[in-house]
Length: 238
Length: 393
Image (cartoon, rainbow over all chains, first blue to last red; front, side, top):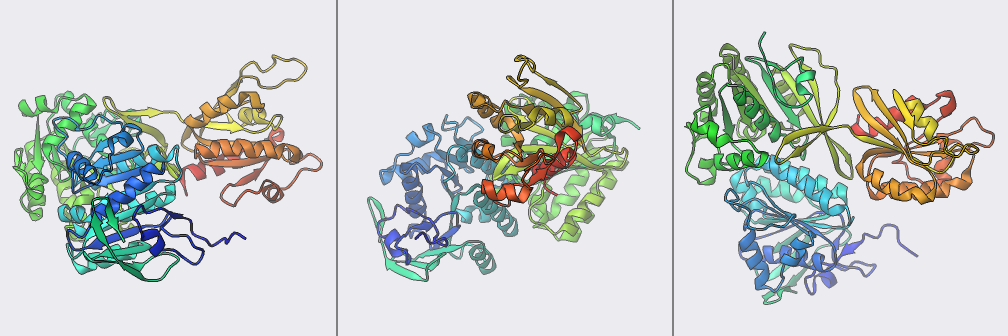
């Protein structure tokens, strides 16, 4: 019998993660259409996690709306290539929709793809317009999609904290309504504790990385879990 | 009263010809709706008419704004060289870039005073404030309202038009109202949504010098080109003989049926019905599609362009509900707002709306409106229900 309360899960792409997060019904992964915050000190693998999640989605024909605030297109591509997660193909197919808020595009865009969209780090109004049209664009052919912000840290650094809290609320609402599954990366203690508490209260799932262990502090449908992890050539492995 | 054109299509009509010198206007946008283009297009137009202006930016550095203007096909650089336009750069300093422009802001607290100076520099001109929302969380809420009122006072004395770009993040209603009360005109920028944003509209909700008629106009933004308006399409679809043509005729101020009598014995629509509705501030073209399956291709095409759909059923013919469901699914995949029109309620055996919901297994999100179209019964309710779905409360 199908349990009506069963929350569909989507594959994380991180070996061991879906097993760690498996619920009573045997399914694991990130609960679909819920929001996840991944946080931890610098250099603990938060971006690797979100990129691995993105790439898994792309290979599963789940498009991704990716908002990059830390790395411009070139650096983002290099980071993906390091783990052998080539993205050009998906930009060409327009299943990777990249909103780049950091590259200087006044001399021309670094990518000619239709789904490469420049924006500006301290213009949340413009970022939300582009999120809106991005969601519209990718969800036309696919009701199931992923979305990543890497990272909220940079948005908070360049803008008033409270404004970014408002923006992230609007962003999550937009993704929820369209049926997507968003992940937000954030560097621990980069903003004050009130902001951190607000960030945590906005999401459904909270994952912390400390360099050695991954802690599932909260996740829809399951209790707290944890596991050691390693960063290898192929990405994060539990 | 000297009116200056905004150069936004339709907006000047709604404002009674344009904006009086020295007045202020607030573009208040739902997050996700394009609003900056309104400010830029107004500036470009007013400068072209031979005036001067400034752009205050706290959202991106001036070079990026020059680049955006270029994308729209407007030559801001020329105006800057000719000193017809200058920047008040409230951005570069905060992102670690060298500041550009006549004035730059190093600390948020200087914003009020520097903009007052900028206003003084351009009598009879136009100043664009992009973006008001970005200032709010930096400053006290009361203070922001006071600052707007000071700027507007100065602008009035100097015959300068001020254009505020404002994104309605989740601020308190009271603050939004206070801001609106302190400007001469408010243009609301809204979205039409069904899961995703499928349309954007603007409407003048207030103008102190004119009585706007609360008309919503749909727009999109083109690069190059700027703001363009369009007449949205509403779709009328449903199984054969549900009364679609009569509905289009009944709802429209004017309508035509293409090839209506092509088959004399069985009058049916073999191409489409076209109507035009102009009601409660909403203007739309109505397209009625043929019900037969061989025309589904046309439904696909029309559904892509429509912003809303009426799905008509003959309430006394449950054998056609399966077909209706199929047509709902087609519009569903295009995710446009829709309602069911349960027609022919007067016929024997007609099912009540809730019974139809049961039989068709529809969830509560799709409204069902009972009608007797040939008696013009329920038609207005159907239109109002769909419009409410499109625009919210």
